[in-house]
Length: 124
Image (tube, rainbow, N blue to C red; front, side, top):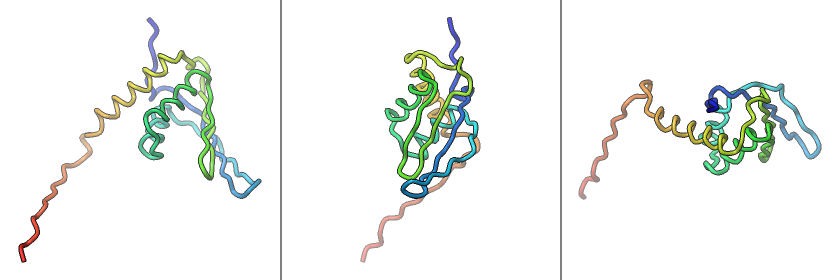
């Protein structure tokens, strides 16, 4: 049975291209991140739905690269190691496992308990 790497162990090469004007762009220096980081960015920061993020992850893991266009920039994501390419069902398992991990680590030991008190309005 083949072991599937978790999203936190799959490395990506990310290149961002900023749209400055109609025909002017600024390409950033390529950086590395994990697939886990990218899933968290898409779901938590960018606000992608799980279905949209899953589409990106499946494209990366089955083809090896994907380009995501935003209003003022685009991202090109590519697997750092081509041996991380997998079939669609394995890619879905990587995504689902990472989301399940996110749900269980939401209440980390670093977070604190907040006390919120709601008072009824004073009668007049």
